Amino acid sequence: MKKMLFSALVGTVSGAIMVTQIAGPLVAQEAQAESSVYEQLDLFGDVFERIRAQYVEEVSTEDLISAAINGMLTSLDPHSNYLSAKDFAEMQVDTKGEFGGLGIEVTQEEGFIKVISPMDGTPADKAGILAGDFITHVNGEAISGMMLDEAVDKMRGPIGSEIIITVVREGVTEPFDVSIIRDAIKLTAATGRVVGHTIVLRLSTFNEQTTSGMTEALTKGLEELGGIEKLDGVVIDLRNNPGGLLNEAISVVDAFLDTGEIVSTRGRTAGSGERFNATPGDLIEGKPIVLLINGGSASASEIVAGALQDQRRAVVVGTKSFGKGSVQTLIPLKGDGAMRLTTARYYTPSGRSIQALGISPDIVVQQPIPPTVDPAAIEEKKSAVERTSEADLRGAITNDSMTEEEKQLYKDELARAEESAKLRDEDYQLAYAVDIIKGLTVIVPKTP
Image 1 (spheres, rainbow, N blue to C red):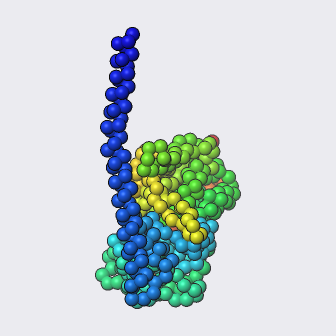
Image 2: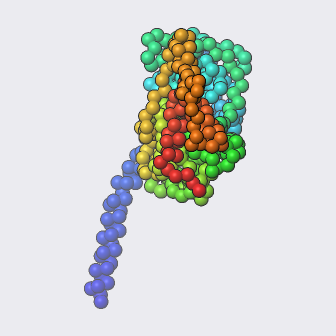
Image 3: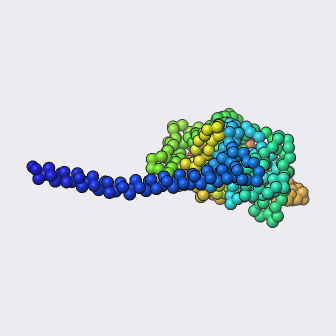
C-alpha cells in the first residue's frame, strides 16, 4: 500500500514538473508577443506625434486617426473599412432603399475603382455605365491610388449637379468621358411583369424592401394570369444586383424552398459559423424557376443563385457572377462611427465557397451588344413577318378540326409566342430564360 501511494505521488509530482516545463516557454512566448505589440503601438504613437508636430501643415487629429484606422482595415481586404459617423449614417439610409448619388456599386481593384454594377434606373444606368468598367478620373482629377471612401466622396455632390467621369472599358481602345447628373436615388428593390405564362421578377438590390416587394409583384402577376394553375414558371433576374442584406437573401430563397440548407458561414475559429435552413412553404408550389446572373451579380445575389442551384430548384442562366463570398460584420465604435470587418466566408449548400470563384451558370448565355440599327433591315424584317400565309389566299379551305373556341385559344398562344420573340430584340438573356420556362412546361406535367 505504501509502495502504491508512493508511485501515485511520484506520478503526480512528475506531471506537475512536466506541466511547468511546457507552460514555461508558452508563457514566455505570450509575454514576448505582448511586448512586441506594445513596441509597435509605441512606434505608432511616435509617428503620430511627429506628424502632428513637424508636418508642413497643421493636420486634424481626428483625420489622422481616421486615416490610420481605415488604412489598417483596408490593408486586410477590399471590403473591410472604417465608417465615420457621417458615412455610417448614410450607409444605414442605403439599406432602407433611398439615398443620393450616381447609383453605382463600386469596389477597389489593384488601386483602381471598378464598377460592380449600375443600379436600375439610376443616373449611372441611364448614362450607360456597365459592370466591369473602371473609373480613372472624376472631373479630370485622377483617383487611382485613392482610398475607396475618398474616391466615392469625390463622386458625391449636390443633387442636380454635373459630374464627368473618365471610364476605361474592356474592348474599347481609349478611355472616354461620361457626363452624369447627380440625383436622389430611390431604389425599387423588386418589380415584376408577366411575359406569356411566365412571371419575371427583377430584384435590383437586397434591402429591407426586397422580399416584401418580390412577394407583392408575384401576387400581382398571379392575379393577372388568373391563378397559379395558369403559371408556367418564374424568372428571377439578379443581373447587376450588387447584393445587400444577408437576411433578405435568405428570405428570398426561403420563399421558393420547402426544406434544405440555404447558406452557411464559417469564420476564423471552429464553431463560429452559422447555418441557415429553409422553412416549409413554396410561393409557387414547385413551378420551374430560371435565375439570371452576370458579372454584376454579387454577394447576396450569389447566395440566392448558389442556394437555388445546389438545391436543384432553379436553372441558372447567364454569365459567371462577381465572386464576393465574404461576410462583413458592422461593428459600432465610439464617436458614432463603425468598422466593417470581414469575419467569415459564405458557403453554398453543397459546401462551395463563392469567394473569388463566383457562381457558374448551368447555361452560359452572353448578352449580345446591339448592332447599329439599319432602317432597311428593319423594313425587310417587318415585311417578312407580314408575308402572306395560306389563310390569306383567296379561296383557301378552312380548318374543320378545331372549334371556334379552340381556334381562339390557338391564336392567343401564337400572340404570346410572338410577344416572347419580340423580347429577344429587347433583352436576349431574359428571352432565353423565358423560353427555358416554356420548354420545361412541355416535358414537366403541369401541377393539377
